[in-house]
Image (tube, rainbow, N blue to C red; front, side):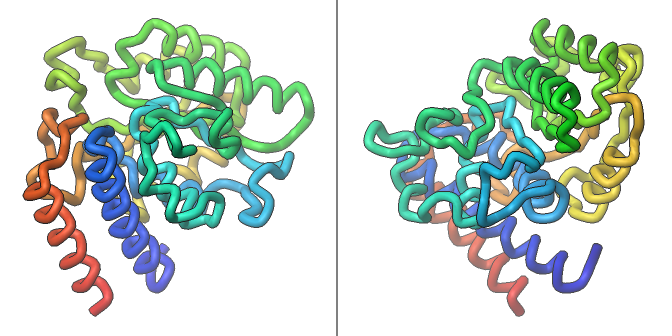
Length: 281
């Protein structure tokens, strides 16, 4: 993938990052680090990979997306706004009682969410149930689920992974947002989940690793590969950077959910707007 398509995705990535900063600053709460790390993954899924009807988000034949790391929902809301599914103005009521866009996806408030998520790893089990249900119903749709590396510390994740492998759910793809950090520090120092690929393969999954999870072409190749796999679910390990796109947030676990000061906000906005200006030439 290249040319105008790539340029447009890069422009949208900067827009989504700008939205994340704006939303969390106005709310004075939220999870910037993990939201910023999956921007490219989300845009590629919704704009290039998943089978969707933009004018009919509830089309029965659609591919399903589950944000299992539900705290990183600011990215999802921004993407929904770009698709025209939510009003742009609603972004600025993020995490407010009178707003529809809550701090974790809520199916009651936002029916575009395939399920409510928040507690880590619950989305993995729901995704397995969705994929199995689609198989039983004879619907050819796929399920894509974004998971976090800290989520691999949850036992429920491995129950879901084992079930998916044993049920041969080749219509299920997990994408691991592998930024290596969680709320208290280094994932590997807190409760090391490695070797990740070997564990999934032992549970009858196929695995592909993307060395740069912010490279649209690398991600596209991996997600296209996943569609070709038969008889087994797939894991795409995308190596990402927590806080990607905002220099002082990158690879800093403190920005898992740190409140943006006015100075931080202005600095982040300035960086992103300068990059957008450079991209637009």
